Length: 212
Image 1 (tube, rainbow, N blue to C red):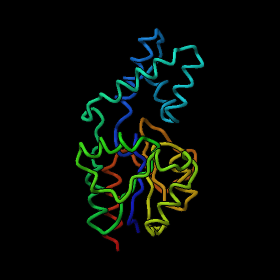
Image 2 (image 1 turned 135 degrees about the vertical axis):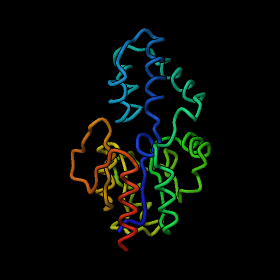
Image 3 (image 1 turned 90 degrees about the horizontal axis):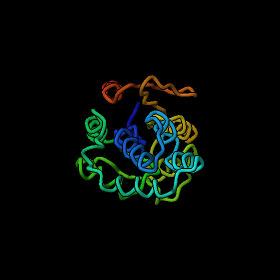
Image 4 (image 1 turned 180 degrees about the vertical axis):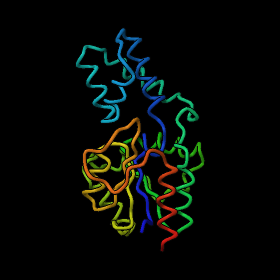
């Protein structure tokens, strides 16, 4: 039985990476460094800090990162939409009396900017961000806090993420796990579900609610 969903933000709930990668690539190009979007995406999906350090180690001036952040702050929210089906599946959870939560290392300001723009803030009981002070995933502490604070049953809570570190943290906190596979990616650990789009997640939640 699935009652609650814990979401990763970038690449799971919101399709933010395409726009971020393009801005990052442009910032590098302005410093004379040429690379592929695939390389940037691979690094950025681990952490943005890892991507920045990678190019700093290759001699790119730190100003490229300042340039990127300035461009990101000016980015139209419409260019970073929620994935198709995100609003619908979150609404189903709320209608059924469950809770949606977000665990991300994105800043609170930028997370709320997108949630507010797309009128989705009210669908979430809590949004745990960088400012919350928890260690980065795959450390499970943020998940454990959410479970305890909202008295969630881990057995009826499903965590969705597009990276190994998302599902590892969720597994170690005791929740069910759902890997959002994109471009054929597969998790390195066993998970409860693998989906290719959020319509499939909606089907999982609906099937579960109908079987109660």
